[in-house]
Image (tube, rainbow, N blue to C red; front, side):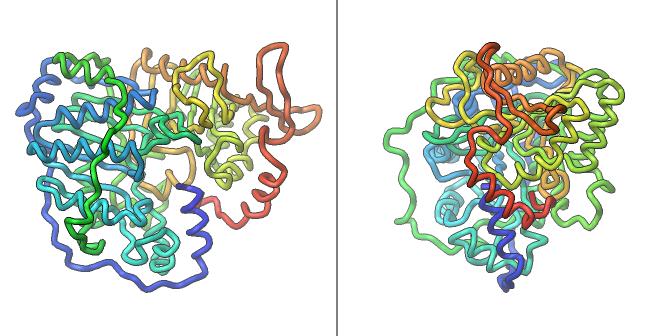
Length: 501
């Protein structure tokens, strides 16, 4: 999706468009459920809560993440608040939305907010969903014209490039303002390891306690902002006869621990200090420089700068820029060990972003930063993220671990787009156990699914290595890529400014 957006945006910069957003749109302000204790989930959380702490649990497996989302939807009694950058039109999305429809039919109020970038040609689906009793659908920062395809949307709105370039990248589902799931995953087969070609390595968190109230406050801010439009104000009307049919025989993932726990009235979470980091909706219209206002990126930079012994950065799109390299230089001068995991050229879904990262790679390696890039085929010895089956692997998780005790997990990529352009959401949690879990996941990929990137001082070049002792392979160009891939990247990369990556 990022690759398509970049290509369309860069190609449209020289054109003009005339479509404009409607004015005086009627919409009703609403807020999260004020008293979660009026629901079974709220009472369950209250019974397990600990003062001044929040409950969390990591969701690493795609199957488990989808099953957990379904479990929350199925156990909601009062409200469901759903906010995503992408809701794909595939089996996983249809399955989850089918459960959302069932929730609405039993009286649950559903508020669904989706960024408009990836809804091209899908107005009918969201219009039908919004027609249901108890369901309201809003789209964030919409394209007013050419809605059947992304290229036609961009052409119709190209005079507003500064506005449409800013997207809502948040990922969040909240049930009864009591339990939530947030992190890096969008809604679609690739995010739940159900695609036959490419699947994402990703991380989400189940959350309870005080951070859920903070997450709901962030949702309300976006939902009630002037940038959120009812789908009916943007899309063409639809008839009831054209409503999409329910899945005849959906492949439901095996019941997750969360479903079993909720069915048995238990809540096995780790209770720890945590807080929410959330960009404001108005970030998309800010006239201020990114470093002059409070954003998630600034918060994360401050956290990283606080590292005393070790910093771990996991990011699919890693473009540190000069400021990021300088931060790494400062940390290395203090003796901080730095580990970075990102995509290889063979595994990334955005070659242009990889090219942006590669501009800084040698400088980081010379500082003594440990860099690993995910291979397109994971090994099978440490199957933490499996089943990937025969599909290729792509990193999509976004996490930071500081000094083996502080963890960030969210939607923020370590690049200029997340820092300055998109709105982002995440959790900062303080727990040596959770830090150990994330580090262990990194170790699994390092041992069985990555290339170690090194600086060959003797040859003055970068080398990639992978394999077990005695059978290590070495490359001096990006592994498992063709000359044509590398050549095309060199040709087209200069036309994509770093601020667009």
